[in-house]
Length: 123
Image (cartoon, helix red, strand yellow):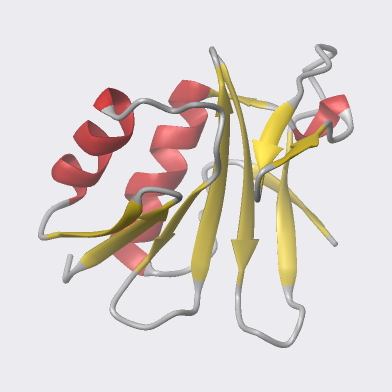
């Protein structure tokens, strides 16, 4: 992995390892805000929303509108997240577990491509 950059409402943070990125996300106060993760370039990137044991992930391939949202047809729980300062309640099939979210982040930081460890729905 090269450099990972996390952007939150508290600022931008650079990391040298995927473990440091994971540790930051696990220990940072979430305050239900979205967390943006990228490499050295702005795209591709991921936006992660967390609420308790649930997460939703958006993958942005570029700035031209190629965007995907996590997909989990096994989830029936409706969850509200805070995205860009506003409440956001995606369809329940967009909600994944925290474990799956961390797997996505690790895969993204290793490949800088859309993770294959979960299913996606194109937006």
